[in-house]
Length: 258
Ligand code: YXS
Image 1 (cartoon, rainbow, N blue to C red):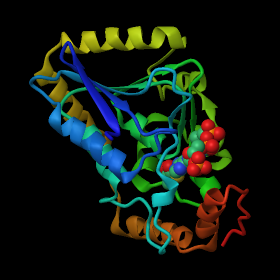
Image 2 (cartoon, rainbow, N blue to C red; image 1 turned 90 degrees about the horizontal axis):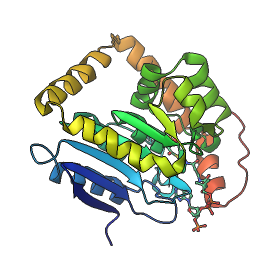
Image 3 (cartoon, rainbow, N blue to C red; image 1 turned 135 degrees about the vertical axis):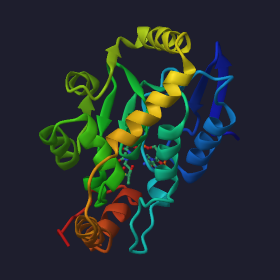
């Protein structure tokens, strides 16, 4: 059974997540999302929309916890499916709109925020919950957050690790706009139509230009090594194992800070 559905309408590829019950980002789902972007691209396609099924209470529950490594390695490194998918979204040669209905969790926030525009329903929430699983949020995802939100807001989302309403994210400039759910799809269609009516060459060039410029962060080898050593402290820790065990056993984790 396919884990994504693709419909092409007026040069727009509508890509719907279809991995019930909560669109957990399994490797298989993320690979199919990447394949959908590979198979449906310019010149036939001038824009793409990533969405969940109409009426979804959960847009995506984030990375499939059952697929997180427990052998003491970084759970989200360069070649992992989530990082590969995010790079594919960022490199896609046309604008991608995330049309978000339902709650968004963990790595799914990273997927949504890697899209070029984010339009959300008024009841949508975003939760960055790795701290509840004993997982260190991934490096590129953290940098992507720093590009779109203030430090205090990022720390609230990562440290409190609770759902935050779409309105607050829109006020902070993290989302483009929030609509009553019954208006969300029409607003997305209108936005996509505006994009499709403009120059696809300028879109392709400007999207890549903005990606290169926004990633132009001087990072010394010492800084990189320092960050990697911090991250190793976490994914070598008992808390990391406890966070995943507790989730799978459906109980509250007992973190000990080591
Ligand atoms: O018990 P069954 O077999 O029916 O399965 C349950 C859940 O275990 C399962 N499920 C998941 N399976 C794998 N990975 C997940 N992320 C995940 N989330 C849920 O789906 C079945 C239905 O879940 P249930 O009964 O809880 O549904 P609900 O409607 O009551 O609640 C939906 C959620 C999404 C609010 C709830 O499932 C939830 O809080 N899930 C965890 C969300 C989360 O913390 N995700 C972050 C994953 S870690 C991650 O994304 C990266 C490592 S990071 O954070 O660093 O980016």
